[in-house]
Image 1: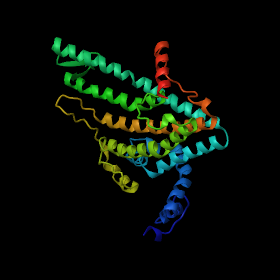
Image 2: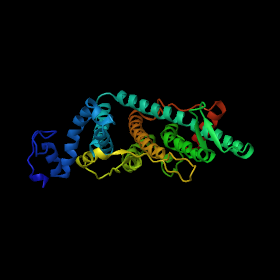
Image 3: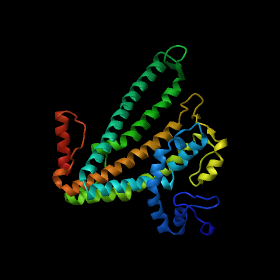
Length: 329
């Protein structure tokens, strides 16, 4: 029983055969688990920043194992959650400008990534047109990219299946950008009929109790799903760090290269990476949306849409969009 094991040291055990006193406190009850992780979060954050080689130097397999484990761990969750609470508390109790700076930064990040990823839609169209012409008119069997001798050569079916990657880029990396732009389709039964303050309360509630929990659960599945297609032995979400470190000596890269057809696209591991990126982008946008909703609720109706960087579509299109939004509200 862990409760019968002696403890030594506060954050880390100072004697062999013991556990840290903070770990023993966390194992005592659910209250101790929550409070202990909040207390440990600043220590874990500082230790991570000061010791990057222990989790970023992937030539050392133990560093790779730590990265995989902590990327989906309780410790990482409480570091992120504690950081969110600290910034929120500073903005609420001291200077609200701190929250506005964070909102503008996160929304600028979402817009920047989304605007860049949106070009994948144009590439998808151009590549599809090129494939049709080369296959149907010129009867070409493969496409080469790059100088002779080092050209990247693949069958036309590979390039045809690769179009799905462009679609995944747009979906995963433009979701938060579309949210900032206010372009998501939604069913509105109550929202448009209530006051500005009630709307902002609904937004805050939705961010905290729907958007964040849903994306955290999705991230947990996506994180280990991704790594199961990149390394062997396959990491488990329930695996303990000590056991995973013991497996580090036999761990090796095993990147998924299986396609749906013999000459088809064989880099489906990129879809798993994009799924994790999607979760990160949406979680950051959920935080930004909560802070924006709180600030707009606090500052009143005149602050609605404050600092929002939305794309300008031209005078006529902008007037039409304004008329549509005015009619819907």
